[in-house]
Image (cartoon, rainbow, N blue to C red; front, side, top):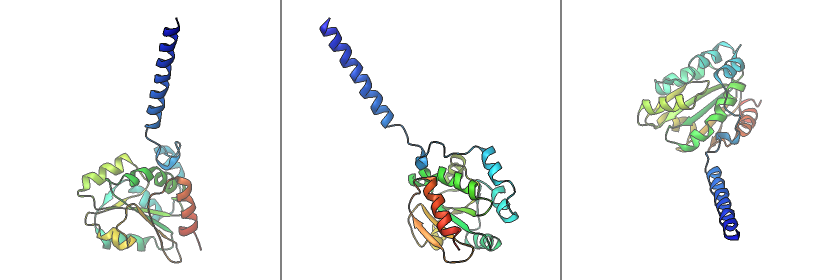
Length: 196
């Protein structure tokens, strides 16, 4: 009976260790918050009543636009008077994937006051960028930047992800690196885009 109990104890212990290893290897929720992702209905409710120029962005949610610098600068001119947040990403960039839930949530929460725009920088083809936007949906469009020149022009950095905060009045602020949480992104939207 003692050998049987010892074997049972070892089996239970091995099972506990295997469960612990399995749990440790589960993918962590992006943005460190399991409740970060919004449903389409929640996003629509948060964005309802957006002013015209911001509603035009929301109407293009999750699309990958062409046109490069001239088209993006025309869009920025149409957004004059609104704070703008530009997020540079690429489909192959793991930190970009990990911060996507934070951008999805925060862009919806602030979408009636702040314009969000994406730059798909240096994806070798549009299909990869479009697949990324389907997997990681956001409430705003992105501009396809195969060469990376537009992303470099806007962020003055080859780093990815990178985010540019452009207040309605004042100087832009550029941040290289991933946003680990929606709370951190909210703080920077308040501090750099809505300041002044």
